[in-house]
Image (cartoon, rainbow, N blue to C red; front, side, top):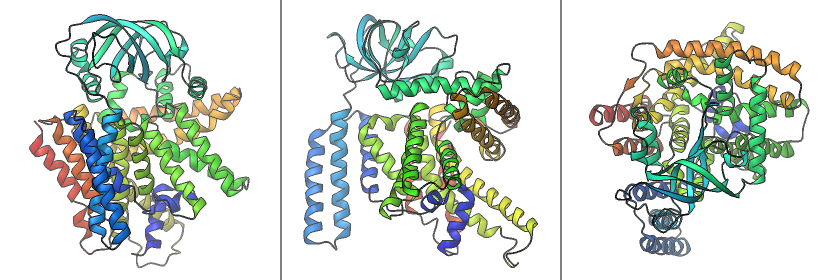
Length: 569
């Protein structure tokens, strides 16, 4: 099949503006892959064994980097030795970054609970319910008393009693707090919170400060962060107008648009988790794509100049991402789209793969500890599966399911509608299969849950969420301007769609076999399975036009289900 045909099939999957379609559907160049692979592998080993080896890193960096430069200067044709030296140097850089940015995690098992005072800075603030009496999150210790050695620079689970000033509730705020310091596993003993405890320990927050009392504010969040937080509160109020008497729909509305899940009941959240549609509550590529599509549509209607409008689109998307909290998934989506759009300025084709590699490399260079974040792992893993596996699978399915192959192109409106429906179905199946396979080992590792029916549930639920996003984004600007007469009716319309969405999700969640409870015998099995999947997606030619290409698409499912058959209990 020609490249033109492939691009046309991929466009039916994304339905985005030409500027984005042209870049997202292309492979792009991946020079940073030589840096990303060593970063992921070295950081994974270092986090697993808490291994700080700056001398090893320096030796590898000098040896590998020097060898790569020498080969490039004297023997440019020696590509394989150059690649080996480049990977060695990148691995050395990863060892040095880990040693410089991640402190050693001491063994605090012999440290008894004690009253203490710390200076901390919020790294992540957890969403709390309106009736909550505390504010909780992950905080980085800036100062600690001498009797708690090794605490400075590490993250802890922090709980602060309310009331506290609004400035202390934001990420980036630094303050003093006094409370009870103890091992996290001794502080959180509730069986219902076992998954949350595993999440904290994977984030290296093995100590907890509970019953905290606020001292003094050391540093307020940055001005831009504080402004984003205020806008988030204002937008949340806009989304509630017209839905005052419908708390369930209002909670879903806020969760889908802003990623705030505090207003959602446990039953509703469990239904979305069982059906594998919990990703709707994470601001990510779908949200950024809707905004980009809307802005490009507006730009074409007003005939805005191309280059300035692209810069404006990048800026608006960045502001929205930061207003919604700047999660790893949202930043990844913004960086990918920004890479695609920015490539147009230098007449290069910035593909989705190039944007993905650039985003992951930049994030890990800035903060290696984000590799431990489940949001980072799911976000980048799923998009990698989509780019390297999902889109080729969708194109292959479209090739196989072409009942009009021997008919003229102008077959009437019925044929065009049917072809569009088939394009959507094959695209959804390809993307859904890639998302399910990429997320399965990670979700089982972190939550002991496998959503076997997520492919079916997503086909029914995600299309209902799309108009909700369109309406939600459409009401934000007039809502912030005080035009309640326009906002309330649109929110009321979205509310009925949300009612149907919630009911359909609960219906799917109650189907037999929709979700299975699985647990890996050891946590490393799920992590190794994910790394094997990434290697399979990068190594196998899923997009190649080979006769028996269909057999290749069975390899990733075989890897996942083999890990379930041999590695779970």
